[in-house]
Image (cartoon, rainbow, N blue to C red; front, side):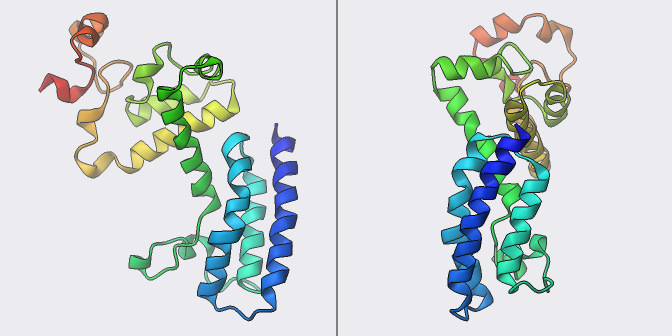
Length: 211
């Protein structure tokens, strides 16, 4: 699977190089080059990044190729991470390929929840808990622990990306109330855990429902 991702991304990398050569002669400013990257280069990667398990080295090489275009093949004056910061932080909001992969993984969650087809049933078979309707409300620690032993790498990336996202927003104040009661490391009350069916039948599934 790693070779499939690398091979497909390599083909797209050649397209990015051709685009880079095309715009290299136009003497673009740094802002102009970032616009080319975000509007013409990155969209070419969306499909592959959306449907094939990722490979870290291939993503690194893709970001390196983007930096080569940005700095005309010279050593970068500003790191990729710094360029990816927001305008408010004085940066150019360059699309991070690593972050894009995680966002695309998270986008699959809505499809899994709202779709009802054979592919969804197949994907659910790879999930770490039986009741997948409750899966996405787990607290981050439960997510990351659950994802470690998953056999399907793509589904594992979906679960891991969601867990990492939830960790990032954990301190916003409203996070804890939206955590599901069951399969959560936050809830240890056996009177609740042993009556899962009763609670769900009364639409009491989150910590905030107890308040």
